[in-house]
Image (cartoon, rainbow, N blue to C red):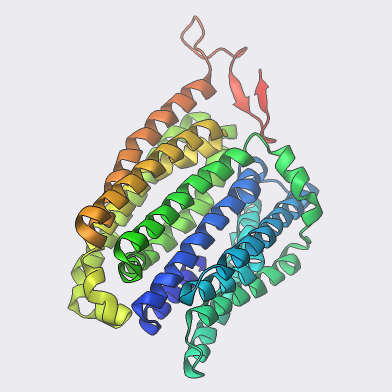
Amino acid sequence: MSSLSNFALGIYVARSLPAVQYGAFSLAYVTYGSILNASRGLATDPLLVRFSGSKGSTWRGAVASCTGTSTTIGVLAGIVVLAVGMTMGGPTRLAFIALGLTLPGLMLQDSWRFSFFALGRGNLAFVNDTIWTVLLIPSLILLHKTGHASVFWFIVAWGATGAIGASVGPLQSRVVPNPSKALTWVRQHRDLGPRYLLEGTASSGAGQLRSYGVGLLLGLAPLGYVQAVSTLMGPFTVIAFGIGLVALPEAARLRRESPRRLPLFCICLSAGLAVLALAWGAVLVVVLPLGLGHALLGHIWRPTSKLLVPAALATTGTMLSSGSVTGLHALGAARYSLRAMVVTSAMLVVGALTGAAMSGAAGAMYGSAIGSWAGVFIYWWLWRRALREAAGPPSESGGQSGRHRREVAPSGETQFQ
């Protein structure tokens, strides 16, 4: 439901705005993605790894600190984005000002989703995201009907309806976010949070550098085409995001209760998502040229259509890595997941910008696909290393040494048995 609201926003904005304004929207959206990844790294990722399955006062205390941390990040990031927006001009200035005003509510709303899944209550997350989506769609239509169809008002409507969803979270959970606990939360999870922060920053930073680079090399209109094809992958993102919400808590549970099943779980996760990504890409390539593509994207459909194949390949490569990413997080192997993300992100940026310089927007997407597929090998190689370290050295009888076997406790602290 969360991804559906973002998909609806992307499609409606693409149809309603000129290519240049849509390019400005794309810059604001990838900036939002970077801040969102930072919030997840410091706040919700440690919650999922260490408090999945927790109940009662343990869950409530963790969630109060986690959501307070997300809110604090939203406020601080909003101030920075507003300041940066003031230095810009044209539609980009308006897009960044709107984003800065709405970031606190957007960050808090996202943290409720992960908090409910850590509790095993996905139905509460569904209700919260549904409230956001049900309010967003008529808001966008109203803006169009009243003559306020601009990048500024579209982002304000998106962020304001998300903030309403965020305000419902305390009523659902009976937990009030506590921003005063933000520093304590970060300190308690300093072995995971900062590395997850850097990992998320590397991922979203790669997307930002790709977008800014494409914008500088090719202009805002081609950047809009790149964002549009990413939006077309949105329905698959709905599936991948939903599975991912369940996968990490489940992997963390397997790590504690049945560690031998964890590798098979991660392999099946990657294989399943990769097959789904290829299937969705095939649907887009076959169906959209029959008229649906123009109906969805209007005047930007034709240049966007050339990017479908490389976009599907890039997404498939990312999905092939998803199982190893989940496994690394379940093991608490933040050192390895950070290393993999930094190297893969660097390859993605280099590939995308090299491709853009050589072959325009299509080259940027093919370069991104090459980077994502190269990352598959890096992630699985580091996953195997982390798995061997977690298992510990073999005993003389060929089994695992109970004395030296290292485990990650439910609290996240390393214990030696």
